[in-house]
Image (cartoon, rainbow, N blue to C red; front, side):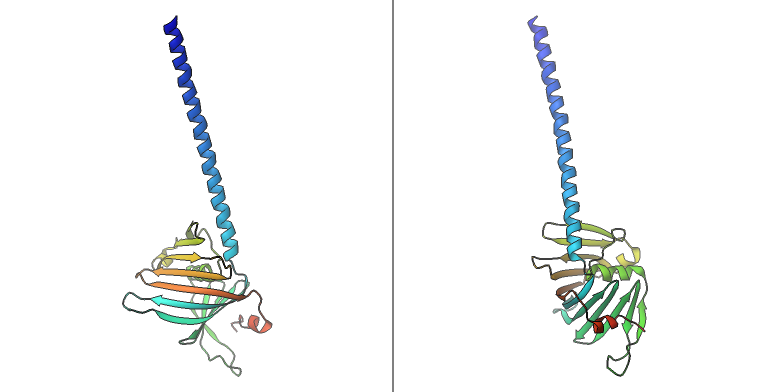
Length: 216
């Protein structure tokens, strides 16, 4: 009788262990799901913070080429109005890009009061437009980018587009405690790095600013 009783206890203990294992597995699965949900929520919050729908920002850009000891530094102004973007370099050499839909246009006439601004198309591939929007306005399409997000409030983007991936390896976008700042690093296919610091100065545009977005 004692032997049978011992076997019964052993079977009961084994059943208890198996049940506990199932419960632990279920708990771990719930924790994983919760962690994933929290991570997705953090990413959505970050993307909302990152996005610029209208406004002006000053930028400093440093291009680090593998064959140069010192970076090439340029400064200028970023302007965003609805779906349009102006990227204007003021120094050391003036240049101005206008992004409309999937077109990238460059200013080809001097910017003075007597001559209307005229642009010519320099790129029309949607991947180039996607890059500019991701870097400068935070408009990030998950179908175009592999996205990773870390606890330092930094977003890592790797292009899915074949044409774009041949030109760029990845982008790192960070927003520190000041939500009006952006720190961006791009690595191209030749291992050159471009560091960009954006400082947003206003979320509104004047009528004169808005007229700049007309390419005609």
